[in-house]
Image (cartoon, rainbow, N blue to C red):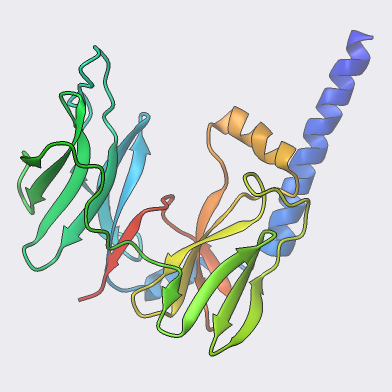
Length: 237
């Protein structure tokens, strides 16, 4: 009886792995070369050892630079730590990044100028700052997700730009838009990478992560893997 259960479980895993590869094969139109055409600088948070940490890089994903880690500084006043940076905004005029992090039990606003290492505490009891994150609207373009597929609305005309083939679940399958590039030529989106919710959950259990983030060239509909982040500020000088 136990052998049958184990065999069924192994068979299920094999089916999920195969379906994952089939999903990527039939739904991905990838072109890693498109990254080299991207301009500007992106600011984002990435989870390092469980902590959301501030980084920047060229939009082409070259020259990745650590801006600031709050690790070991997020005393929550209960004897524990929350070192995550939950919100941020880069002001290119003053060349200063503002961010929200825990400080002695309260979410607080800090500032950090370029080439500085120690942030300045500006205000306590702050939960958000000015946001410059990429958005799902750009001029007359709007992107949305319906039952896992991505739709682009332009001048009143809507078309499918990324079709999801699988068992749709709002949390565990399909595509979700993150935002347009500053020039409106590219779209950043997230893919859960599985045809079924169970496949996503199993991958999350094994890898402790869900899906991947991509960037799409809207002129060719080709995509490439991009920064694994939802909050992205993209600046083109």
